[in-house]
Length: 335
Image (cartoon, rainbow, N blue to C red; front, top):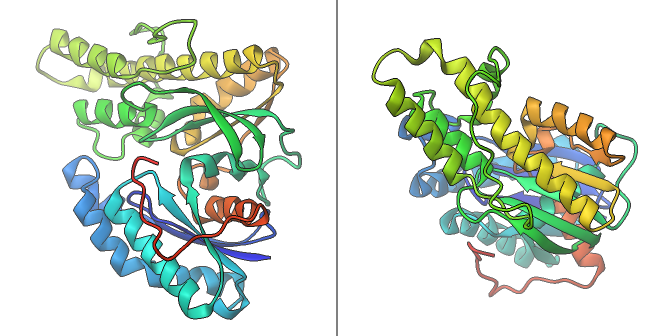
């Protein structure tokens, strides 16, 4: 079965062709970083307008790279939510129109629940895949969520952020430091030259008895540190500050994920989402998982952030279970 996956939940327009829910034939992403950079964050109206311009070219490129035509596609999977309503509507409207004209089924996908399925896609880093049930940490600019996956597209939330997501905290701290947008990659790079012990921040655990997250406090701690530092040149501290902030966030993500595994007596853990590209998180989580007897599954970096392949993979399993979308399907920004 060939599935065309369409993802447009935020500022990336993505399309992919995936065979049998596993084999990636193409995976095309059109980024808008250059558009939103000067605003220090995503402007929803600009994002959706750009999606209108790119949805058809991106979908056509995905088909071309897969060396198939739209007539070879068996079904379409498309993000229904969560995300920016205007952005979601562009991808959803495109998918419904193509499905109607071609008489093919389509299905709406929760793109947060689709992220963990990236570890089942090939080619990928590991030749192995998680066994069900497994714990999945999805950590991105808009979401920080721990899932317990019982089967494909059958999961329950065991923990989630109560305020800022981890990726949002990275972006806001980068803005405080004048590093531009998006901030995660810049902080990651600077932290490699810094000492994570030089500037220590309290780990925002909320409570050891919950798997929920809170990252607004760590952002405020950085702001207060900068106020105490005073006006001037941050270049003398920026590497150490980036390393200290990053280490605090990474420690909480790792501790909560491993605690969820232990509490549920589960030995397999996956991590996905844009922040899963962070080199410190990947390295430290690999070490900690090994020390605790946990099998860690990491997608390729290009599959961590929003992409059409994960949407197509999720759609495949939803369709196998009888899922079908109707033409009156609407976007669900808080899905």
